[in-house]
Length: 438
Image 1 (cartoon, rainbow, N blue to C red):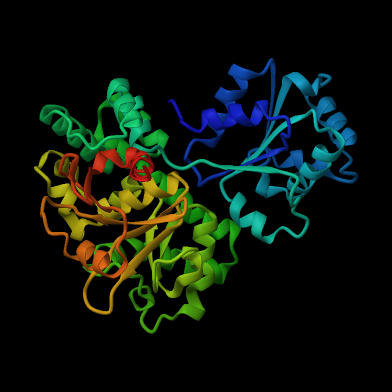
Image 2 (tube, rainbow, N blue to C red; image 1 turned 180 degrees about the vertical axis):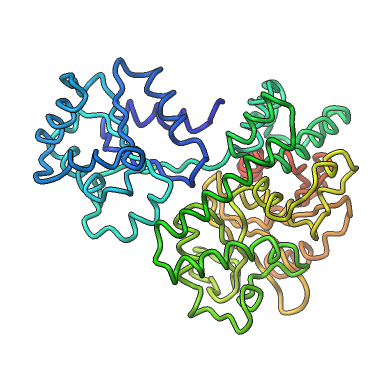
């Protein structure tokens, strides 16, 4: 399956200031598959070491972490002398052996010609606890579940994907094309972006089998809670994780600790939310008191929303039935639009946005506040076809942004300072921002 991050790997490979690369991302988002494909296409030789599957590999990093010694140990293990310049060395599930992460510093300093990628499903959690982390000695990339554009590429809709990736105007699409994209979006919202889920469906056309894979992935996350967190912390992480679908299904999607456990409070669960965030399993949007730069300076850390990393997994947790795909607009509106807001949060996170939202002292609320360059834009999410933009207008009266942006099932619309981006067109949001600058 084609992943857009492949281009970033090529940039890393050709960089004159290349460092060992840490590839982060949740379990099952496709890190191993992507790196293997990259290695086979771009290098003459490829060495793969998985420290979770083969615990004995830890002994390669026992004792001296001098880069030459480590390279010799690996050479002896594989039975072949390693030529660094034409070889990619891939350390998978590197969080299992902390010395592997520490060694990246020495590879960078002592053997910079080596091409090394380290990845792991809990790398984000491990890095935050690592006392000898090689600060300034590594490059970072993060892989997310497959975006809607990547879904289109996977289902052989290259022309539709190319159209959305190149669209910078707000001219509406031909209605039949618009409806076709909405139909694809509904299926994507149900299947989600986990590669194995999508591949299972493409191979079998069996929605039930795809749902079984989603449940298997959810079970693997539960096992990770117990494996990589202490017993008490694992229980709290699990409680937070299980509460997310029901937090999002509320009319007011602000996260409430009392929905996790009676008398729940921040002091009990803050570390658990942070664990899930660093593991890549959630996206968090914080309330901002006022939309000024930098947005991070005006955050109210006591008010936030928690989104699942993947819509398909969210649907599996809510046990949404597959017949919802063929019912007009029902999936968009189900659970107070939870799927749509979660989808938009995921698409924005994939594009590198920090997530914020704004709420007035009255009832006005704008779902996302986005910083692009030195400008701030409000983005409201609508799961239905309502024309009401009361919250956006309330925001505009206070702060006078250049554009008011809504995303909804409607086609592209431009009316003075108001723009509607269809839900499937989130890929074009930055180009619309850029065009507004001129």
